[in-house]
Length: 40
Image (cartoon, rainbow, N blue to C red):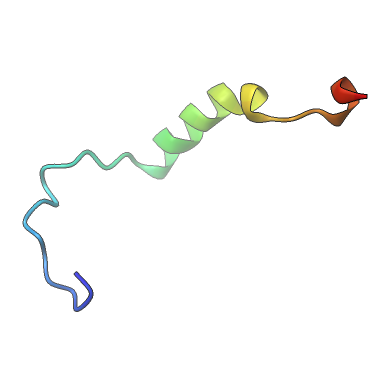
C-alpha cells in the first residue's frame, strides 16, 4: 500500500461519495455539537 500496490480489496468495500458523507453528517450535526450556553 505504501508504494501504490493494490491490496485487491478496493472493489469489496463500500466507498461513499463526498456528498453522501456530508448528507449523513448534516443529519447528526446537532447531536454532535456541544453548546456551551447549555452548560452554564
